[in-house]
Image 1 (cartoon, rainbow, N blue to C red):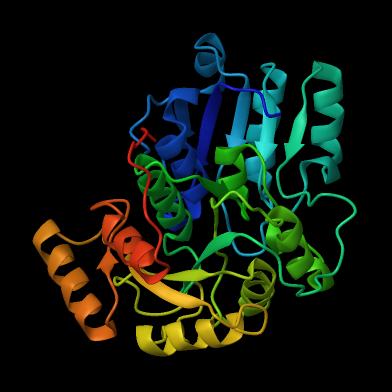
Image 2 (cartoon, helix red, strand yellow):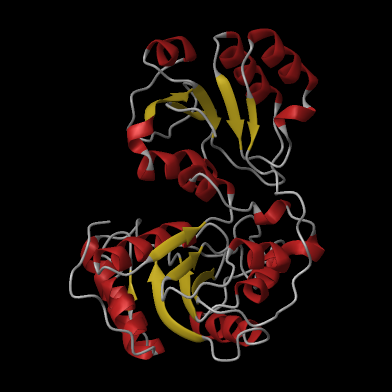
Length: 345
C-alpha cells in the first residue's frame, strides 16, 4: 500500500510522453494528488498546484511519486537529489523506474534515518510460473498497439467504465507501473523475466465463470524492436477473447526509434490476431482506439470515421468520445446482452 496523498514529480522533464505516470495519476486519481513538483526548466504541467516538497508536506502529501519514464528507466543525479530532499522533508518516495530505489545507497540510508518508506512499483510478484497455454474459462479483452505509449491504459480504463455503466462486470488488470499505481495492484510485466511473462498474465487473469470481463492493459508493440518480446508474451498469456488496437495518429515513427516507421493499422491488427491465436484460436478484433489528443475535435471525429470504414471495425477515441461504439460491436459479436439495470462507473 503506497500512502497517499501524492506529490507528482515532473522534475526537469520536457518530454510529454515521459511524464505519463504522473499524468495518469493526475487523470485517474486526481483526488489523491495535492500538487506537482517541477523545476523552472520544465515546460510541462498537469494543471495541479505547483509546489515544492515543503509546501506539499504542509498540504498533506505523504508520498512523492517519481512519475517519469525514460529509456532504460535509470535515475539521474538530479532525480536522486530531489528524492533526497523529499525524504529529508519526511515524505515517502515511490518510483516505477527500472532502477530500484533500494539499489541507491544514499536513498536507503536517508529513508532509514527519516523513518519513511521507499516503494519500487516495478517489483514483480514472487513465485511466478511459466505459462502453459491451458484453456481457461472467462472473458478477457486485451488492448494492443502500433507503438508503446499510444494510450492503451487510457483505452482499457475507458472500456471498463463504459461496460460498468451498462451493468456489466468489468475489471481493469494493470500490467505497467502507471496502471498499478492507479489500480493498486497488478504485474509490472516489463520487469518480469522473459520465461515467466505469459505465466504472469495467466496468474493475473485466472479463470472466471461469472460472465464478467478482465480488461487487460497492453504493453509495447509487436512492431517495436525494443519491446516486441513483452507484447508477444502478453498476447499468449492473456488468452484474450477480444482485441482492441490502439494508435496515436500523430506519431511519425516508433517512440525512441526514428529509423522505424509505424506499421499500418491493418497489418498491425492482423499480426496481433495471428499471434494471439496460439492460445486463443477464436480471438476477434472488436475495435480501434485512436489517441486524438493532438487533433481538433472535427478532425479527430473525421479520422475515427475514416479509420473505422477502412478497417471494417468501430473506431473511436474512447477517452475523449467514449467507448460505446466498441462495446456495442463487442456485445454483438459475442451475442451478449446487458443487464436491464445499469450502474454508475
